[in-house]
Length: 441
Ligand SMILES: [Zn+2]
Image 1 (cartoon, rainbow, N blue to C red):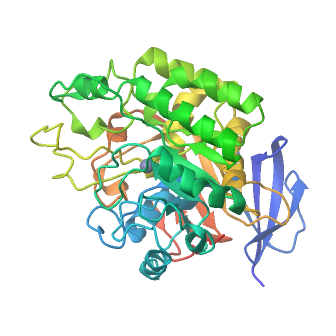
Image 2: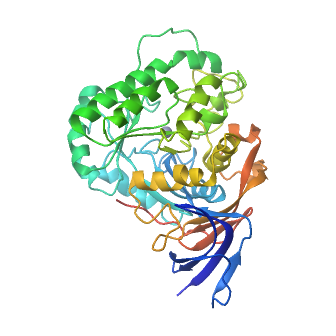
């Protein structure tokens, strides 16, 4: 049996931050004791004043393997995750090829992970017009829920669904108890001016698109009572209807991402396609309203929406905004980017733990993850909230190194990452690889 303990003066537990020693046996937290404990007959890793927290759980990651491994892959993505303090992630049904809309595609994906998981990884399935009325096999295959696009996904193999398609799929999703995750933009008439920079990209996807999509989803959620989740909320105009729907008791949840919080339309470089994403990065005033909603507990959790592409497809050199892939690479910087913005707005370590560990674990249905509690998995991180994160090419583990976060001054350096009780990453070095497990519902 492998036993060891970790002592931290700042251990983040569900009810506060404590000086505590955590005893771990065979990958599971078995005991949490007050303070520094002497006389325990085990190795104690004393991290002093560094923060000991559950590993971050990121339920929104695009890994692209198999089929588009030149965009990102399980090996590089799960290394980046470990370096960024993420110990479990759930992978989106696009942009791999095939897309995860059938049980066969999920099986191919599971084979593609073999020997490459350095953190734990589960999968979302997808709804497209072709499978909308026959989701049951996919819902029983081990996925944690079903992702939909309400607008062009940018990928022909993953066409968006209509309201009618959603009506075909919602009964089975409701029956499963698993969530429908929706990319919430609904196209409506707008100016078709050429998209030549970040400003015209923003104008081409007005907040009304998000607000209309969310209204449609709330109506369907009310009708079918299927768990419904708004991914990457960007428009603060939608907060009111989301709040009202929650007050009515609808099973509705919402996430947002650091790039909608720490970057704003006024400050990002006009010509830099690195910042192109959908929905787009909006105004500073909009983003401050999102921050307020986070502080008020009205946004359930934070994800990276890591959506990388090769530099040629991002058109980093020719700034072709019409053609550039819409997605931001940011997996490794999820914790530090969010913490940098959150700490400036007086959010606390317990808020970070709730928004990035506990709430996403509960949303996905990962029963023994997201908390430092006896019986829970020893997916743990040690990090220094005050230490600056230096980003350079060598320290980025994403397959492609271009990321808008390299221009951001961030605090919150990850010092150690334990996955299933094994030390995977320690200050720039991988200590023990392939400790991640496939997560299945
Ligand atoms: Zn996404």
